[in-house]
Length: 317
Ligand code: NAP
Image 1 (spheres, rainbow, N blue to C red):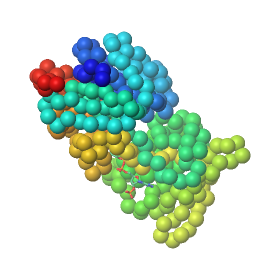
Image 2 (image 1 turned 180 degrees about the vertical axis):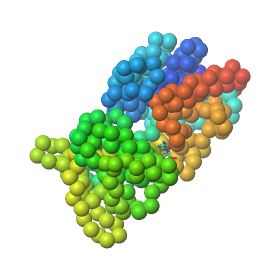
Image 3 (image 1 turned 120 degrees about the horizontal axis):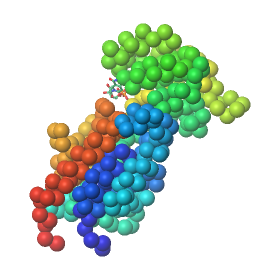
Image 4 (image 1 turned 30 degrees about the vertical axis):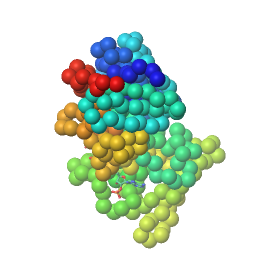
């Protein structure tokens, strides 16, 4: 069995890599279990224009590579594989266990930063046309749809925000919501209603996305849940904004999760109820979900872990 680590970080978005940077600079030599597709959701984006410090923007994958390199420079070690199981100690000074396949790793602290995934509708064509018309991020991809007809699926604040942004580029944005009522706040709904090239289709669900001869999205087939009416809507871009799913499956039953599966932390800290277990990034954040806020939470988790290690003697082996 290898030596007990000071810190294991599970996850590799801005939260995980920032936690790695800070704990590495504190000489804690963190071990990051970063997954196969390391870098989190930003790996799937193109231009990132709202991360401070990059006046002309930066590509999402380049930003994540830079964060990873920066953490490595100070002694972070990486396992480019998925954590398959965790066993978290409930006693201060106890040892936490993280498995990668059959290999067990032990640590005095664990920082959970597995992030969130965009929720999928599960409609035929959605996965196949992802990147060829179907997208989960208007903020990232809207510019590709200049003067094109597009749709947004969803009725929450994200859908409104994405629609308003997309409407600056697209000739038309149709918001498709599965109910006549919207979950979005009044202010966001009003803003969308005041936007000239936004139209509305309710209560409709997407039955399928279909490609044209060039292999790119051409139509969305819709169904009115109340009347059974079918609509075939020509569209070049379909943006799915129906919420996010925190990737907390690995720790379900071990740490407290809220109704939506987000890890619960204490007050403004990143502490979970288990001593030495911290959580950061989109795994805990319902609301802001920005690269910069995830990075900030990663920094907080690193400091919380550092202070815990300073103040908590290990249990005798
Ligand atoms: P949300 O509030 O949970 O809304 C999700 C929307 O997607 C709802 O309209 C929901 O319909 C619909 N939906 C869910 N699953 C669906 C499915 N399988 N098929 C079709 N539609 C589906 O999520 P969100 O909009 O991402 O917002 C999350 C949080 O971030 C909220 O607290 C929000 O206020 C906040 N936020 C705020 C801002 C802002 O203020 N600027 C911007 C973005 C997000 P139902 O209503 O029928 O369930």
